[in-house]
Length: 115
Image 1 (cartoon, rainbow, N blue to C red):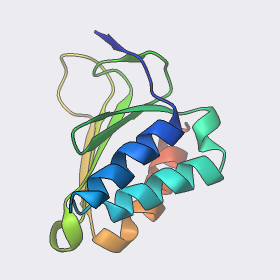
Image 2 (cartoon, rainbow, N blue to C red):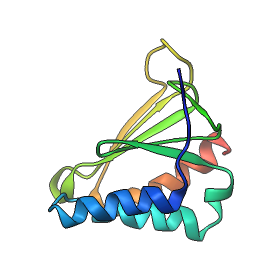
Image 3 (cartoon, helix red, strand yellow):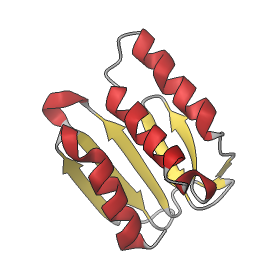
Image 4 (cartoon, rainbow, N blue to C red):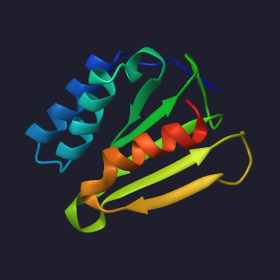
């Protein structure tokens, strides 16, 4: 299944709208602004599925292929990162991080995977 990427400005708008409805996604907005400000938005593509951000190097994204799924679960639970490298295969990578470490760990993931 292919999913067309959305522009990063639209993704940011989606999450800022969730903020207006009292969703705890402020740190997700920070991550998206980081992606835009560092130039990663030129080589990474994304779309949203409720409060999960799906990121890939492909546009359109190929469901479950080289896709990082990121969810922010609030200050107590922090971040959840799941990476799927191939469709219909078990997760390649799954980690949880403290709330204040999302951007740092996102950058480390990008270096590790060489995106």
